[in-house]
Length: 218
Image (cartoon, rainbow, N blue to C red):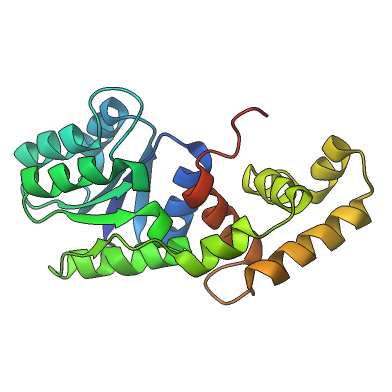
């Protein structure tokens, strides 16, 4: 009896929450996943993991960056498909990436409403249909920016991975008050649960794509 072949994706992202969310999304879609917080760690992993796809942030806060990582990995394994992630402020770097790594695709973090959209883009990349998602997800971000200061702080804390009880302790309010606040946030953002995502994950993804690492300052 032989094992079923599973596609392998190597996720490289220096922000722990985003790295976890992306890897989890690929795992739900039957990918075998490995993740790393730096290019050096990723290169060590790639030697034994042999990925089919590299999904990497461009700015990893240290060298090598994502473009350099992809270039090195492609020299070692030319078959590896590459998809770059970036924030809107990294647009110029992303353009450079597409010109230096042949066939690479680019997804702007602010242009996706959920990590599942990222997996959809990866499916296209693996099917030799390079993608470029550069348009900001305006509806989701507009709703996020329309939250009250208190609701936005609640969203930041849940995006940082805190439970309702932990948020309640941090904000010196009752758990029930937090539960109501979270429900109002989901309603304001137009987020509903489904088979492939949960409201909490969707809100965390949107916050992280818009503002960056929610754990900063915790």
